[in-house]
Image (cartoon, rainbow, N blue to C red; front, side, top):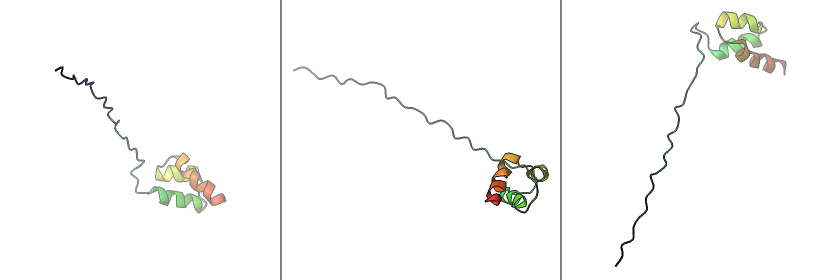
Length: 68
């Protein structure tokens, strides 16, 4: 009686790549929400960015929201 051979291939396992979390913390004691609130109050984006350390691109979101 012939034996049945089991064919086995190596399992293809794909490892998930590491998750990279990036946070902007300028270390000046301001939160992003506080900085955006200053923009909503009428301060210029450039001035708030200089004072709080957050990039102007992150603060422009508040400027657009204030205009609506």
